[in-house]
Amino acid sequence: MSVLLDVKNLQTHFISKKQTVKAVDGIDISIKKGETVALVGESGSGKSMTSLSIMQLVPSPGGEIVGGEVNFNGRDLLKLKEKEMRKVRGNEISMIFQEPMTSLNPVLTIGEQITEVLRYHKKMSKEQARRRAVELLKLVGFSRAEEMLKDYPHRLSGGMRQRVMIAMAMSCDPKLLIADEPTTALDVTIQAQILEFMKNLTHQFETAILLITHDLGVVSEVADHVVVMYAGQVVETSDVERLFDEPKHPYTQGLLNSIPAIEGEIERLQSIKGNVPLPDEMPAGCRFAPRCPKVFDKCLTSNPELIPQEQGRKVRCYLYEEGEDAV
Amino acid sequence: MQQEPVNMPSSTPPEPGPNDPKLKKKPDTLTKIILTKFFRNKLAVAGGIVLFIIVTMAIFAPLIAPQNPGDVEMDLLNRLAPPSTEFIMGTDDFGRDIFSRVLYGAQVSLLVGFLAMLGGAIIGTVMGSLAGYFGGRVDALIMRLVDILISFPNIFLLILLIAFFSPSVGLLIVFLASLGWMSTARLVRGEFLSLRQREYVLAAKTLGMKTNRIIFQHILPNALGPIIVASTLSVGNLIIVESVLSFLGLGVQPPTPSWGNMLQSAQNYTIMRDAWWYPVFPGLMIFITVLSINFVGDGLRDAFDPKMR
Image (cartoon, rainbow over all chains, first blue to last red; front, side):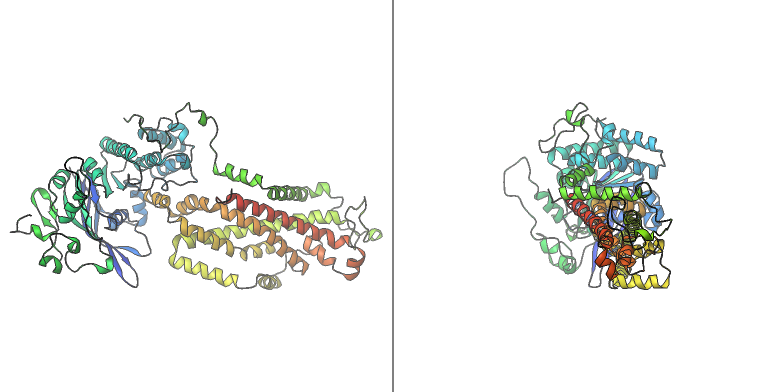
C-alpha cells in the first residue's frame, strides 16, 4: 500500500520572550492508505500539537511550525498557502475531537452544520447537501436522520454528538481522519460503539486514521501501527501486536504495566514515577532518564537517536544500541 | 451497515424513535426559552407595551395628529392655549398643537435613537469581532482607538463636530453612531476572546471554513445576546443625547419638531410660568420612552442571563 501521510522531522515550537517551548520536537510519522495509526503518550507529550501541526492550526500567536515536512498525497502541506490548505481541511483531512459536548456549535442546527461543509467543499446545492447529510447521519446509525437535521445539538447526548461529528468529518470522504481522543469523554459502552463506527467507516471508504489517545485498550482494539510519544519526541514505533507482546522502550513498558490486566494475579498497579518534564527543565540526556527504571550513565549525558530494530520497529533507547542486548 | 445501538447506558437518554410522543411537540429552542423568561417579567412587558404604543403612534402620526407641522401656520389667536378638547396637550407660543408636534417629534427622536444604535452596534460588533478573534496587533490597534475615543467627553466631541458641519438629522445619526460603538466593541471583543477558544471553532477550522464565516456565522450568533441587550439599553441613552443636543440648538433644527428642540423653545421664563404644558409634555415623552426602553433592556438582560431563573 502506498504512503498517504509522511511527516518528517516536524517541529512545532511555542515562542515567547522568556522561553521557547518545543512542543513537537522532530516527529516522524508515516501512515499508509486505509491504515490506522495510534499516537500514544501521556498528557503534555505533544500528541495534540502534532495533529494540529498537520492541520496547520497551531494556536497563534505563539505557536509556530519551525521545521519539517508534512507530505500528504504527494505534496508538502507546509508549503501550501492558507487558501489551498483550507481546501485540504475537511475535504482531504478532517478531524474529530475529545469533547463532543462542545465541538458542535450550540446556535446552529445539526443540518446547518453538516450541509455547510458539503456546500463549501463539494459545491453541492442546498437540496443535494441535505440529501447527503441524511445519508451520512444514517451511516452513523441515526434512524430518524431526516428530523434530526432541524435539531440543535443540546438535544443530543455525548455519544450522539460524537457520531454527528464523525458524520461531519466523513462528509467529504477524507483520505485521512485525525481523531484526537475521540472516546475519552464518553462512557465505556458508547466508547465501544464509536470505535466500531470508526472502524467500519474507514473500512468502507478506505480512510486512514491517525488516532490520538492515551488509552492503550483503544489502541489494541483498532490500531495497526503505534507511535509512542514522550516529551515531544517519538520514543518507539511498532506494529500493534509486537508492541503489546514485547514493548521495548522502558516508557512503553511502563505504560503497558500501568493498565490493569484482566487475567493473572491481582497486584497493585504499577505507575511510572514522576511527570513528563516541564519544557524549561528538559533533561540534558534522554528525556525519560529521570523516570526510567533502567537508567545508566550514558542516558544522563546524551539523548539517543531512534534506533532501528527488527521488522521496522524503532526505539529511542541506548539499551537497544548495536552490540548491546535487549533487557 | 450499522444497526441501531441497542444497549445505551442509563446516563444517556436513548435516541428517540420516530413514534416518540415527545417528538410531537416542537423542541424548546433557545429563542423560545428567552421569550418565555422575558414575558414573565412584568415591568419589561409593560415597558414593551408602552414602547409599542409610542412607536405605533409615531409611525401613524400623519393619521393621528390634528395638525401637520410641515405646513407651518401660525395661529396667534390660540397662542399658548391650555390643554383642552381641541388641543389635548395645549398649544405653543406660535399657536401650534403640541400633541401633533410631540407625535412628529417622536418620529425624529426614535429614528435618531434607533438608527444611531444600529450604526453603533454594527461598527462596534465588527470592530470587537476582529479585535477579539485575531488578537495580537489587530486587537491592540482597535482597542487603543476605543480607549482614545472613549476618553473624550462625548457631548463635547459632538458639539465640536456639529459646529464644523451644519446640523441635520442625517449627520446627527452618523455622528452619534460613530461615537457610540466603543462600548459595544469592548463587549463583543470580550465575548470573542472566550468564544474563539471553544472547540466548535477549532472544529469549524478543521473543516476548512473561511475565517469570515467562522467569525460571523459560527461565533457571532453565540455573542448576540449581550449585543442585543446593550444595544437596546443604548437607544434610551441616544434619545437623551439627541434631546440634549437639540435643546442646545445643535441637533434637530426647527421647524422640524423633536422633543429636545421643543424643550428648548419652552425654556423661556414666561412660558415656564404661564404655560406648564409646553415643557411638560415633550419632557414627559422623553422620560416615558427612555424608561420603557430601559425596562425592556433590563428584561432582555435577565432573559438572556442563564443564571437568572
